[in-house]
Figure 1 (cartoon, rainbow, N blue to C red):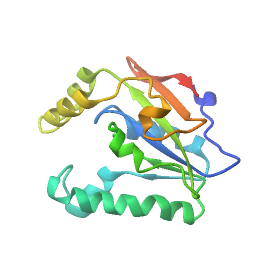
Figure 2: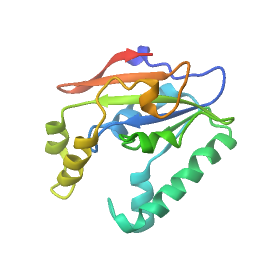
Figure 3: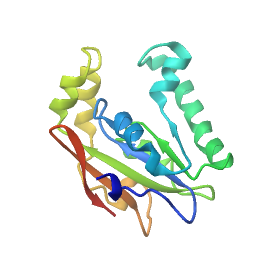
Figure 4: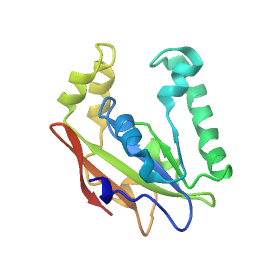
Length: 173
């Protein structure tokens, strides 16, 4: 699998959105594969939460958390990064639509397919209700361009499926 992931882009810089339930392994997979992304940075709202208020989640702070993330993404492209990875659930179209391609970036997706029961096993008791509510809204694969929230002639899409101990790349479009 290591050699099959080539996230370099000779054209416009890429914003990569992860799509997956909490505790699906998005952050772990990104850090295990970060060397393949070239000149990349990761924007992780969970890290912003801990830095701002020391908690995994506080609904009262979410507006501020996302304001920081919304500034970090374009700032990293302006600073010269070729790839920026937004390491968040991005399971709703409303979360994805605001990241449409623009003058600064094109958009790609990394989809994490995993059974909800595995995420629940990994979660703390306070996270289980969050995963349950999100999984009810989770869009099944495949996400077509109309499902991502905008029309695009080419979609960069990496589909990963959990296979007992690791993710396997299923499809790359």
